[in-house]
Amino acid sequence: VERKKYGKRKARRSFQFSKR
Image (cartoon, rainbow, N blue to C red):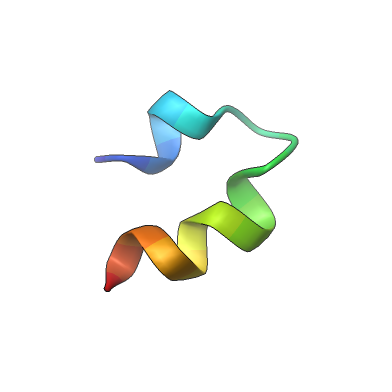
């Protein structure tokens, strides 16, 4: 999962982009 790379702070916004 990429959201682990971004961490928990940017996981909210980066998580959406990471899905794509």
